[in-house]
Image (cartoon, rainbow, N blue to C red; front, side, top):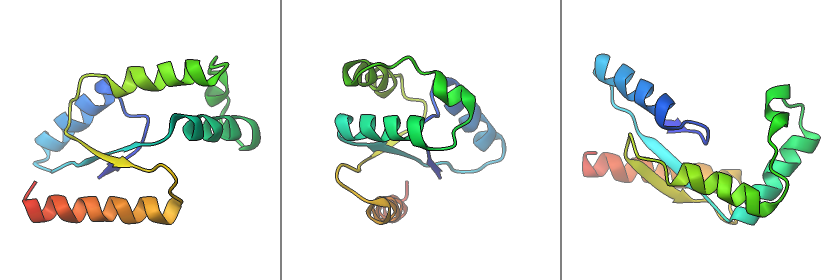
Length: 111
């Protein structure tokens, strides 16, 4: 299970290849949410969390630039099936519950 925002086409191709080589299954849970909330969380992490310096170099000055940045990745060519989960207005426990619910539904479907 991949539950991560920062895997993009190149990384996902490597993950897919590795899973195929090891005859393993991979599921991509693709979290989406309200862009302004995501931007606020991004700013909070940039300003108040003990972040690695590489994470502090984003030149995203406003919500519009952030939205364009996110949109570029959301519109990227899919390598693995994206199982979308909208996490707008959800706390961590609800996000986790939605992830488990999605995984259970995929398992029942045989995906």
